[in-house]
Picture (tube, rainbow, N blue to C red):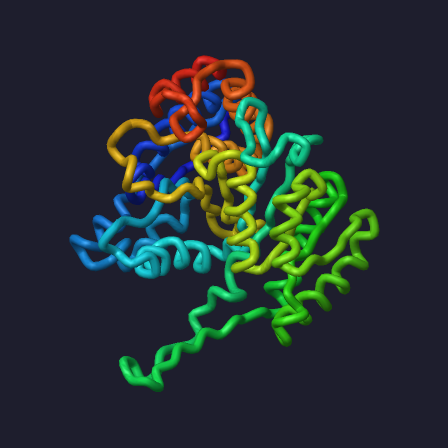
Length: 354
């Protein structure tokens, strides 16, 4: 029996066009081995489209991909288009319309990829996950600008934390910690942010009562950022608000050796809508077109997609091939200190799968 899935491909901008084809090639190779039938629909939604047509995607764009099983995204952003235009014109509408309230970012220091940290700080191995609330918090649309251009000009931005939104992300993080090493760290700042963060902390304590097998603690975000650098091996699952999770996950990706290898998943855990998977490296205009982009982040994101679709064995096979290339071969892309281009690195992975 063959499992069939329809995937929406959105290359986006810059090296998004260079890393999605390797991810698709790896997906197709492992899918053949596991009896999975993948079909793809590609969409040209991007900053280039915005410059030509005035919108990142068409007015009915969300309806066009609503029926897909998953979304695989390359990268978004390009010089000449403000970042808030590209983000709010594409990524955030997808995340919010499809209730992708979990942003999941695994962090590992891989064999063969040296961390910028001293070796004694990464032994035993660094392997943790940042669970970021992905739909509300500090990234709300509530606020505005008053008295533009005048000495009295002001900007107001409201944070929104709901009981439903905080509870469901905490439950997801507690569940994940229970499946891993049983340790949860919550990022807070309740000593300085007087309303939302104490609310977050109260709900954390409420939800912890339902997870007696998970050890938990909370850390102020500034101290936590320092501890992630000074002792990353201690962490298992870190849960944070939209802003805190965003910053921590990029910091952690740098600890792992390169933001070019970092994957992410935007999940609708209830599977009422498609989830979206994307590398976090951005569109990298400075290297676009040179054939040197590292496809690992996109391929790892594709592996996470297979996990979400119910094929963890296939997802694990992808990671075994990728990590094997790094651990026991000299093939490296430029961001990892090597000379291999995108195609050479992809061929090495495909050789190990096929």
